[in-house]
Image 1: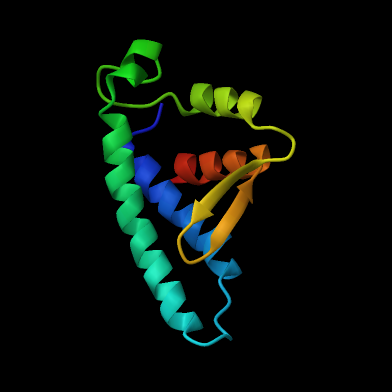
Image 2: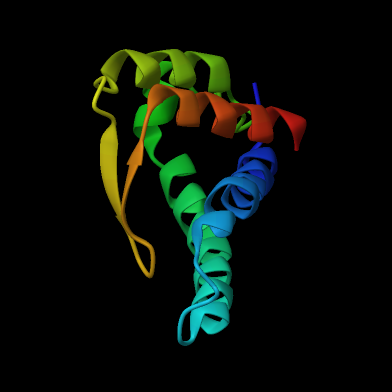
Length: 115
C-alpha cells in the first residue's frame, strides 16, 4: 500500500528522470518548453492524483483502504495485464504522443515505492 503523497512524489520523480531528458533543449525555445512541461506536469500530477483518489470505485474494487492508501502492486498487476505489446499511446502537451509499455509502468511503480 502506498499513500497519495508517495504517488505524487514518485510520479514527479518519474517525469523528471524518464521524460524530461527526452525534451530537446537545443531547439528554439527548447529550454522554455522544458520548464513549461515540468511545471505543468507537476501541477497535473497533483490535481489528477487527488481527483482519481477521490473516486469511490477504487475503494469498491478494494484498491484503496480505509486510510486512503492505494494497493500499488494490485493496480500495477492489473495495468500490466491490459497494456498491449504495442504499448499505450498518450498525448502529452509539449512532447506530443508518447508510447508507454508495461516496463514503463513498472518503473513508475518503483519511483512511487521509493518516494
